[in-house]
Length: 399
Image (cartoon, rainbow, N blue to C red; front, side, top):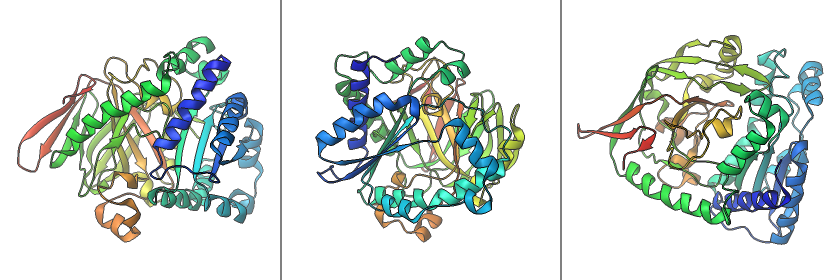
């Protein structure tokens, strides 16, 4: 397990991420919510103390246990299932920061629950996420999250707890004398790549691997962003494309644990921006119901690439946070179906109305599901001038 010194450094890195992720600087009296899975309580204690030292108000929220979560989905009547307290909305309207410590004790405990009920809850909670999104666009909110090693995560990743913990230590630079300085270097190195990607006038990107043949259209007024503090660790650079220009096939060769379900080998076919065919080696029925959650669930919200030179993650971790940042031999790309990120708008996100987002092809959904591919791949930018530029190959950006 993590030592006390490593947990203190982890807390420092999370606070670095929280501050980077917010446009406005934090000030005394701000409100920061820390959402904690119980196994991560000791890390939460370090964060609580450091937040008090910052002069902000920490609000500690502990997640449901596995039994509680299963009971909630199994026993709730229709009113209980979608209940959202007015006090939650009031809290979210005043939040300035949010940190989530992910430490699950089960990843498959909802496998017997109707996915439609899980989808109902996601849709019911969307207004809270919309409040946070709007506050983030205004520069008033920053958020970050991390994973804490648990026996369940290690078991599902087919690693020992010690091996799993070592991956977290490497990935978060907790083996460095000054982890925050290491993250600052990654942040600065990524700025150069983002500048290069955003300098091109791209009509569309073509993604090619053994099982992917996909066209991604960035759309107007877009920019590549990433390594911004939002996730610890995070090495991905991504864009929220114009969903209407997605064509072809995408395959996720990394398994996925989502909403207490296990999914493997997801294959999606897009036509005119919409998923028209869904296949999966395992969890196909669940996958279909997820993409039927609402109108936007079957459209693309994000396209991402990870450079293996940044990421030290080299094995499956049974955690989307880590798997979407896989480095290994070939890096990775991931495609998210569902909600897009308005901070990929090349302008002031606070000026984006719902009408403007729709015009630009930003997708809206209660779903955001990252599906990861780690195959060797080539990504080619087809420029509006007619030229072509290979932007990603052999797991690395080509700038």
